[in-house]
Image (tube, rainbow, N blue to C red):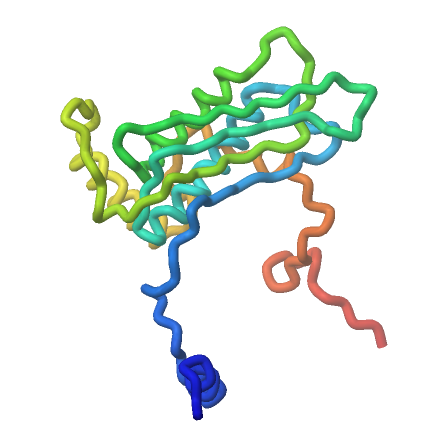
Length: 208
């Protein structure tokens, strides 16, 4: 006697795909975070740039799965292992009345949340930062708000144009200005995989 699981296993062993993508539940949250090299970052503008890029990465993932988020959390903290440096952490959560996956709206909100938690006059070195988007819903089932001040139609049209340009010309061809150009220089990447096919300096060398 065959069970349902047994039949599916038999079919999969014969090369038949038995799992429909539509049956796979969406993740309840998306997180993008990085550790920074050296002591970390102590300048607000550099941390803003990093957070903006983290949120942009989350937005791309949301839009790829045709989803929106209602809430997100921005965090940044100093090293837990450096007892010779002052410690501090930023953890701010923002809520939207209308779920969104708009790049400008989310990046702006993330940067403002970071600024709200920033301590002026203190020399903190932030070793890690990140963004978590959550309370995710399908973009075809959005509950609107009567008092929403954003023109969602124009916002969606602009986002679609930006997506089309970026898909044709490469990621971040068009981006929010605060994302900057130098974020990769400060990321901790000691264990980054070698770029054998895209960087001539890292091409495999064979000695005979």
